[in-house]
Length: 277
Image (cartoon, rainbow, N blue to C red):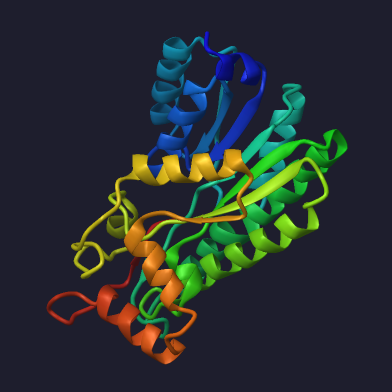
């Protein structure tokens, strides 16, 4: 066992949206460095397969799988109760789960958008509140929230998604400042378009963004993991994405909105109205 694994032996990370995409890659990174895992998502079998594989590969002390629909308002309290009942201290919280909806806001379904707001905003805020109390008592802990390049600019045809990611970035940076004199850090990871199931599930598989240059989930997760471990407040993953977000300081929002709309339109000019929750 290497020094990093020795140092992290007994520590635990809780990862939401852990059954695919960034969440799966985060699980692999934490397991490699010796963290015990709490995997949270709806796909029980995928999480079990991943968890048991990582437990065997890295000789982890414990892997816990919690099946939860994070669009349900009751989910955060249920997750926290289960973790506490098992006597587990969460050293790192990764609020990774999220979803989007593609289409004009005046055409999309309000109830499904309310579910996205619950998933992307209310659930990570509540999980952060619950586990942060425990971290504060120990004066130790790390929190990673998944933002997006959409956190920095208006996002026509993904209006609700973009707004939720803007919230998460602001929330994370505010908490980072509040906790700057403690042993707890908060990091926002902001990737661009990536090779995950996001676009397909959001009904945006035929958009220009989905068919352009995509980041690989493993690379994005590695950037986020390293920033989290270094205690950075914010990390934009990818050189082109760094350039894009930096430009938001000088380009007017109206121009940014036009550019984002162009990227979210289909090549044919037609738009879809689907969602993943």
